[in-house]
Length: 516
Image (cartoon, rainbow, N blue to C red; front, side, top):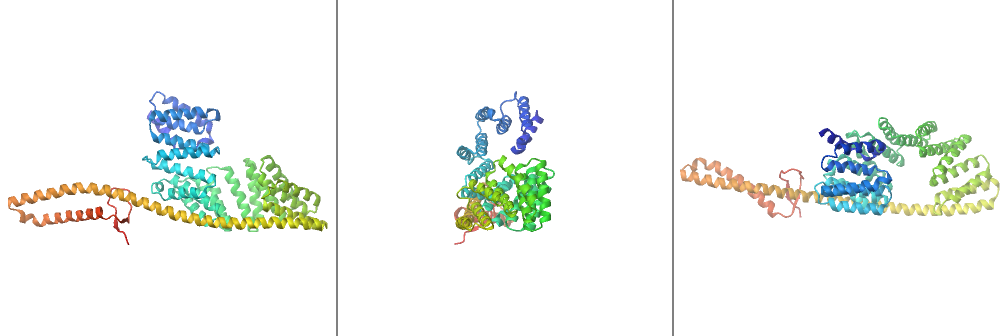
């Protein structure tokens, strides 16, 4: 039976995403384990197995699994299990985009975990809550939570939690174009992943690093990072990530004007994506190849690529990408002087645009302007030129406003980080003070016993007339006790202390008077 429980423990440690990749196998395995331990009294392993079953349950079985988990948590009467269940339910709601429900569960879980000894469960809940806030666009509150988690000494001992925290901090910094800071966090994520030999996480980190270098126009570094991601994926196959990363390398070579290499990697990305049915990457690779072929005046190849990209993007209902493809496809017809077809496609693209799609609308009207100039219809050319300028101005105004907002947000993030780091440092000092008080109390009692013993010895030596023979040694011991007494007195009466060294053990904490 001991072996069964060891196997269940190993299963409970697996990442739920890994379990979901082979859901049917693990569903059967859980049923098997539950049968093997059904004669045992209800224990934590019944709860752990049912909690996993809840997370991989089919829609029609969800309510029954949830009720079973609640029943076991109530029977075990352990708030930690109740909090863990609430965290799982919150995550399920978040993934199902039921954000209001998710927030309620997170808050209930935090209320339960804040006073428990299991601080890692508390910080795991805070981390997942932060990801919800990111989904809601509440980046400042999410950032506050993430910085507090990052600075906590308990979290620093848990590589998985710390690595995930760095990933989300990098995500927020990227959102506001703070690529240098995002690169710093992604580097730290990469290092932890390597230390843990967690190649899937390392691949994700390196791909993110490559994208940040690409956005920062550090193309050589981007290629190195992307290649690292591909190598890391070879033994832990993530087909979508590999296809996407090969496509990104193609884009980098396009920026370097190395069109031969760009085509090589874009074709390689297309072949790999088709082989492994990564449809979104197929459409992206085809679209990128179309643009590349247009730039090289390989018009028929460009046309074929755009046609295929349009078919896939229509089928997948990728509306945001369709407009770009229509406009690129129309450009082919402009360059090959098929103006009527080009005009028809551009107008179709305009009809698909929202009123605030300023960049696409500017691009569309600019194309129509050029098209009508070529046809000698200068009235229509002028009309479209005015529309082009109108949307260009709107786009520039929005970009300027967005830059101001991003600058302000970057400043706010720096302020939050500084504030949260100071808060975290204060928490460390408070914890250190509590440890010092405990240590002082532990020392005070034996010191009093030693002093009483010394006094007793002194009286005994005096009564026996041998005090002078032991006086020097006794004075040394009294001196040592007095120094300890002085130290304890200083600690007790000095209320303005700062800690130069924070210890997790029962050792004395080093401190000095606070500077005024």
